Image (tube, rainbow, N blue to C red; front, side, top):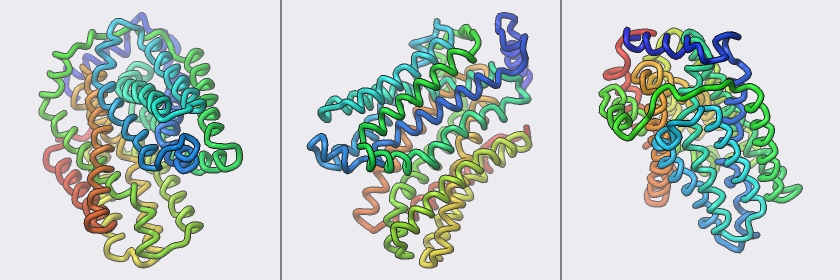
Length: 405
């Protein structure tokens, strides 16, 4: 870390107005942010697990209902870089509480939605909360724990998303089948309410450290290392979603797995993501370049394995599990790189740019993957995943962090 970055960290971590410095690392607050991650990831992808009954109940097509995911991603991409600017004079804990309240509102509104416009409104509200949370969560982590514990804290925060990846879809589908899709959103609202309660208790007073503005956002965007990191985000995230969205179709067509086996393979993907997140937290303490490059490389290897030996049921299952493990490590590596190394003095602006790019990459990967599947078959989407993630890994190795952390 540069001397200026170290000075910034020291200033933040020894701010006498911060109560967390009198009582040590604020792990309770870190856990509350992990709960927030769990709730947001659950809410973002919950429509996918209840899409058919939702569309039937609202009297719309499945395709129209699926636009809810796109709406959330688009609004999240707008919210992420602007949230720190709009709320620049507010205590950061108040901002986090407000974002969690929006999350609750979105879930409740989704549960009572009587038409597509109402449901899309709920998803727009979620997009605001989603982009805002991802833009400031990493910056908050730098203020809740000392710098030598930051990677561990970020890993804990992102573990919430990994846990949601494992259980949100199957639980959502099960609840939707037993009690109806509206009940699934009400349960998500309850989870968010519990999260808010924990945040009210645990997050200390965090007055704004610097006044963010559009000029600071542009300054961060001009940072050469940030440009490289954002390119890597675009490549690895679009590559991941272009393939993984259609992985069920691949497993049905190539190894010809039945639905029960596919469910187990997807469960292995989620479990792999959980452990990948934990592994990334450990690896980030030893090599920033490795934790930024290896996950992308592993996704590329998994995609190539599906294309070459995917006809084997066991080979496909292993490849999908490795893919899940690798992508579980991606957010830890990229957030650590951008927030801790590339722009520590402007952590919220860097986090906002990353969150916006992440959402754009999700939408781009889904759209491009769909075009490939329709025109050239599902294998072509997996092939794009391989090419994009290999390019991401190569970019990190050639242009990424030069020194070990």
